[in-house]
Each structure stands twice: as C-alpha cells, then as structure tokens.
Length: 291
Image (cartoon, rainbow, N blue to C red; front, side):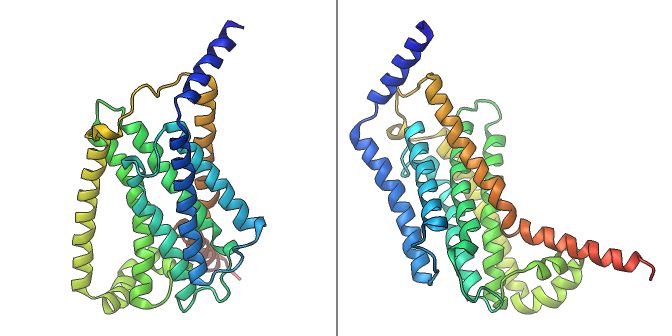
C-alpha cells in the first residue's frame, strides 16, 4: 500500500505541475499541425477526407500521439527538439502526395486511403526524431556520434523525399519499382542514359554540393539544439519517477514505433526496393530455368 500511495503522490504532483495554459498550448498546436495537413490535402483534391474509417481515425490517432508526447515530455511543438524533425516531416507530407497526384504515371483518382501510409510514416518520423533528441541530449560521452545517429534518421527521410521530387521535376514521372530496378541493377547504364541527359552534369554537381552543405549545417543544428539549448527551453522540476508516467511514455513511444514499422515498408523507397528485388529474382529464375 505504501508503494501505491507514493506512486499516487508522484503522479498527482506531476499533474498539478501542468498548467491549463500549457494544456491548451499542447492541444492547439497538435490540432493546428493536423489542420494544416488537412487543408493541403484538400487543396490537392484528395478525396476521402471526411470519412471516419481511414482519415478521421488516423487523424484522431495521430492527434493523441502528438498531444500525449507533448504532455509526457512537457515540450510543445515550438520546442527546438520538435523543430529538428520538421524538414523530414514536411518533406513527406508535402512532396509525396503532390508527386503521386501530378506525375504522368501517378494516381488518377487520389484518395486518402492510398496516401495514408505516407501520412502515418511522416507522423512517425516526426515523433521518432523528437524522441531521439530527448535521448541524445542526456549523452555526455560521444556527443558527436549521438548527433550523427540522429542525423542519419533525418537524412534518410529527407533524401527519400528529395530523390522522389527530383525524379519528378526532371523526368515528369514518379520513381516507380521499374526505375528502381534499373537504378539498382544497371546503375552505370541508368546513370549515363537517363540521369545525365535529363539532369545534366552541372545540376548534379550543384545538387551534390547542396546536399553536403545540408548535412553539415543540419548536424550543427542538431548538436546545438541538444547540447547548447537556450535556458528558456529548460524547465526544472518536471522530472517524475511515477510508474504511471513511465508507462504512458512507453505507450506513446511504442505508438511511434508502430507507425514506422507498420507503414514505412509500404512507402518509397522500401516498397519500391522490395518490388525491384522481386523483379530481379523473377528474371534470374527465368534465365536459370531450363524449359
């Protein structure tokens, strides 16, 4: 009974430490972020935005994940730790639906059901990078390595959207498993016959230099946000060792991982990579089978 009473006291102390102003800020910021996405999808002409089965349910689940993450950590969406994930997040939210709709080989009748994997993966990406920032900020040994690990996650999601967008910008088609197959298994031929004629050497050099600058500047941003955080963002007296608090934190983190594990494999580039591998296996099977 003593343990339960102590846990109750710790949890109640944590609850009393949260003001109504903070709760309102968490609620409004999470709702505002999802509202921006809704307005963008509606402007693109995506259908199914008023159906509960997929859109309403997904929006509700993502709202709870974002709101509870803010609540459990005491950091609203304006916090520098959240900002680190905004570029990869908005890259997925903005780029993939636009290209999938406007590309010549894209969707003819876009619905949210077809785009939901990208939306849910984007939410999972934002949460994952935020959790990574919360972890690496407590590192005292190997800070540069910790910042580099976070940078890898940022680069994977950002560059995936960038490659998808550039392929559409220069070739007017989205990168499908067919293009992925040639890029993986005939890279030299694909580069000389497709990439160079459409993109050009100078554009490739400029993009390469831009990507290098992006990586360097982003690493510095991550490092400064994690280890040189302004005092205004550091709040004291918010640490709780309540088991209930820890369980809630674990559930929110598990929800983030579930979004990525469940939906990332259905998005570019992993989905296209798996299909390209199947094409290769089929061709090898035909070539090695005697009729």
